[in-house]
Image (tube, rainbow, N blue to C red):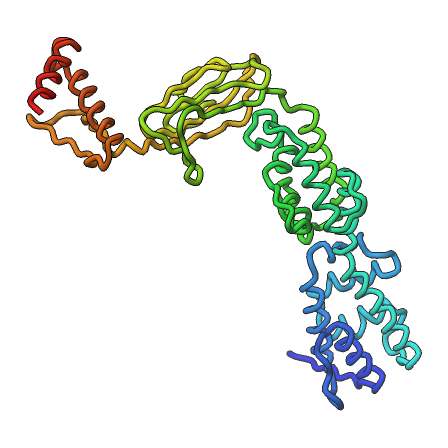
Length: 388
């Protein structure tokens, strides 16, 4: 059995509905249009739902509008008519059946506007608090974007290579994000999305409470950890000796290349790999003493790293070398499956490349054991030269 209750609406109540739509909607109301209770309810709820999560945190509202925020937060569980006609009006000390005067409507409008302004400014206030706190940590003269960007860059550029290395073992959960995310082009995105997410807080607009101080404390802890706890592993110096040139990131050479590796203070152990693998963990890594020279042949991707006596590692350095004569050299395969081997190489276009081809062929013949001694190989070469 259904019961319908009809309640007459006064012109003042219709004005009240229209004011709600006018305050909480971006759309203008056509002249002469009567706004319904349901339209007023849908408008207020659409506005509340589009607020960032942090702006729906009741404890962030000023005391004078905090109960109003609580009323809005419960609106989804209420009947539209009851919410608009009773719940909201109770916040303005309007009881059921009380006549709405123009003076009371003016008071309602003013308080709703203050409430709306408070709600829409919460996120900005929290962000502003973060900017001020971060500016203090990084000695920025102001919390403006350009000053914060400059302060972050100056701090990062003042760090040693080991301090900047995000894979260094000394890092903890507070310090690593500060050297991992170093693009300061959009400082707001860094401070309000990237870093808080890296610290487990999530982006600022998704906070349910103001966590600005706890979040910025993590930044401060990380900065302090980097400055005070990074091991002082000696800096690696790599010097390429002999004729070579650069093509992008590659070093081009012919035949043989010498690389001299040293450290700033001559201390530590230098580890390297020739296959591009990480020299910290690779089982194929080899050792060099500071000041020692490494002779390289062929195409190699060499990675170097310095370790101190305590087992701390500095940042690794990669040297990608390419022998321009490599295509003209003769190389046997590791496994011979046929009686007659097929070897592929590029025919040398000039004398230097031809010498590389001849040298590689003689090296392979010697390694294959086809001659009993080097002297026998020399004798055969001499006979060939006489025939030519």
